Image 1 (tube, helix red, strand yellow):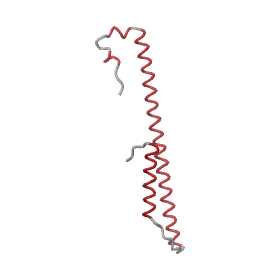
Image 2 (image 1 turned 90 degrees about the vertical axis):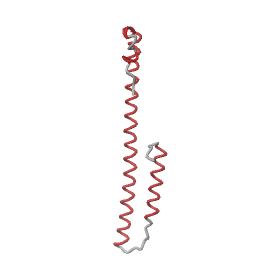
Image 3 (image 1 turned 135 degrees about the vertical axis):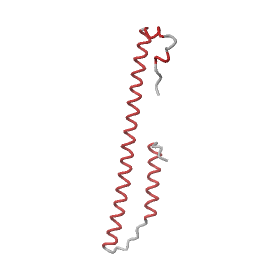
Image 4 (image 1 turned 30 degrees about the vertical axis):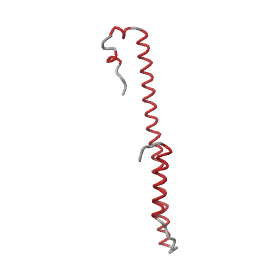
Length: 105
């Protein structure tokens, strides 16, 4: 990902001894570190977002199953539309993918 400064100066090694070049190399190293930290933060943020999405989906499924079990147990004759529920979950995933730029789809 990052270029090796030794390769850049391979034809002019004597430039590496100049204080300005050394200062520039240190500065570039700091920037590379910041970029890596930022990339790691983005990864963890996406992991947290995906965790929350999966948790929401799981809880929705659990609620739907519990409702169906109660419907059978207490003979409520409440018709549960599973197809509609699945479509809603799909829309939720698509919207989350778009909102958080997760690149799932």
